Image (cartoon, rainbow, N blue to C red; front, side, top):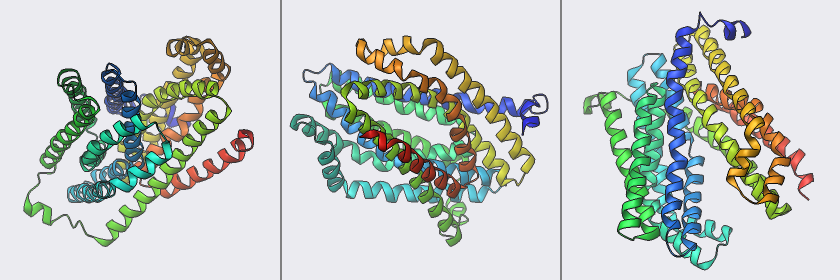
Length: 410
């Protein structure tokens, strides 16, 4: 592995390929918080602060749901990348259609069960009556975009698997650009308030889904005769898809439980600790934008090599993506070491919060080096659809986290 990492000349084309696949993903990731910031900004100009809380709560609900069904994107990437590596055009189409059927089923279930899901979530958050009323209004509109939002996840998985990251970037920019434009139109011009923010998101999701489906239809050279070749209901493929999706769902649940507990434990200690940790978590998310790009490149390239049964190319892919991930991680370590306190100062003007965040900044400074390995190997294992190992690693990690963290929370 070390020899392959250091063999720059022998891997020159692969280095260039990795970087070409990575930068569109990073830019697409950076556009996500911008759209969220505009959502907050437009309702922030409305007369009642309850609107901000309502949109934040409603957006949190859907971001959580879509994060939990991230298996739609990840599983599709793995299966498509392997079929692409094996030059099996028929199975590429079949994998895409199967995942679309799952997305339709899960999204339809969310719509059908929207009332009980909403009741449980709003009971849990215990927001004020005004915030809850507006959040319910937002939720009631956005839920109708669930199927299309999940179609978008599948289409992203398809494009990542085919190593078409630039096309995926165009779709993400379409989604977020349209969302921002309609936000401004519906709220600032038409005065639709919270409903306008939700409607802007749904229209953007539907439009992007239809454009994405059209692109994939063209890539697959789809026709009724070709659809008949796909064998979508092949039992072994359906079982494999179910196993992969369930494993990724369990892995994501483990992550979600840890993050929720971390913020709950922070809130239990004090508002000051909660505020400081919230800022540090935002800085950790910026790290994810960088490392995610190489993880997605690893998904596509490792899956392709695995599907082609090319062990040498697989090892080189891991070596090259690992090298670039380490370089980016060390850059983040250096930036947080030199400018961490300055960035914290930009995010809050409260001296006590700045001091508390600075006290724990050392953990953020060393975090990038430790984050390299799970981010990168997540991508490798997703590309190879070795999701049972991913699931087991996250279960063990979660247990170890609670062994260390739980006694100190009281």
